[in-house]
Length: 250
Image (cartoon, rainbow, N blue to C red; front, side, top):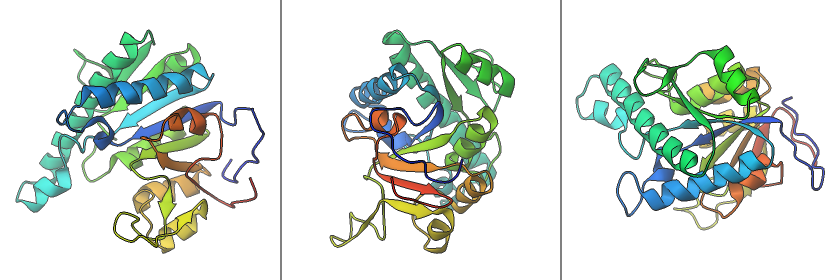
């Protein structure tokens, strides 16, 4: 599963995927929750779902709260991280509302129990929802402080048997250095897990990459703001950067 699969024109590569969306993708000029952006992301998710892929989602909370930054300002780190988990639940509920407004059947499952607003995370129930054609949004990270939502995304992907993680970001893949600061930054269409770790590239945190490597779970990094990018990534088109065990010709 970790080797980069060959591209088959016009055919969907993945049967079940986990889409990781940064919290910043939902924020903008309209504030921490920019409803225009929420609807744009929801449209992309809808398109991916309607292509026939089974879809789980993990959303960050960085548009509302950053636990690491709060800790740097003197807040207890564990408490700050729990606050960040609550922020991801807010984002999950907003995206759920947008998706259901488009006629899609969704479930939110949280790693921290909040039964009045969401189901607790139960692996078998999540898989059953996917099999029944529901989109499952996993919130509250892993339920533990000191772990990022990147790690939560990899963990949930492995638990539900996803074939790939689609990481939606603000740049069109992975570069050898920050393209926003260096005009000569070089786009890297393919990487191995070890290259991503050794070069300290901003793919995911090292725990998430190591967990993906240990479980042969490919990671596709792409720009969420590029029109149709979520659908193209879910359908297996060449988009962004793919990180896997042994990149081969696509």
